[in-house]
Length: 351
Image (cartoon, rainbow, N blue to C red):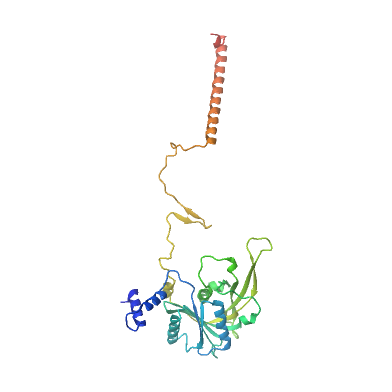
């Protein structure tokens, strides 16, 4: 029988305290590591593998600059093979120790040159990993003198190409890249806070010496300056300047979560789900339509307060109706008197 969440928390506290009753400091620390209804920005742990070249070290430094302040770079090399069980245990230990749910492991060897493994964890366990091979790279230093993004600013992410929706591996890679670079979750954005955009373009290319094709991803980063629309529009017009880092890479190996684990990771707590409101719907234009249920009202016998203009209009209407009735009566009387005169030879007034 699996332990309850309370039992697991107590066992973890005793393990940290060395088998004794945990102190208040440990209790406060465990409280900060608990899951929350609304999570903040995810932190990324950047690691070096068994062998890491200077070029791959530059890649990690640029990733830290792009994701700062939600990234931590470890300078020492690590004896980690990410797709082995022992290597995954080491990654889980390091991500838990540094309170990070994202990680990137850079390495370089003859078999897999310029290798980068991107991954994330769920419940302190490896959720999925993607190994990519960098074919071409331009660092931030190659764009010297050009404007760069501000610290902590959120990027605009654009994914170009049909492969992002048709290829299964690219779908999961897209989800992973969004997790990596999205930054702090916010409800609204200020236009002045948008200063850079990252574009990921997926295209098929042929393998050298064969007709087999594989997807090639081009990552480009641009500094964005919003200026007034010269045509007089209200929305500002973005002007893009290449700012780096830029890279071209391909997918080498993948390890994605099983459908059951993925469903569990995507499950949202009931506390943040929007409660369904009765008798309220939204149409295709985003307008809220409501339905009210009221008792039957007797409108015919209900008299409300009338304004002066309405009272005058009613009085004039009654006067017009009375004048019309009097004219009809006078006309009928004249017709009857003429018929009487024709019949008897004298008018009824002379009787």
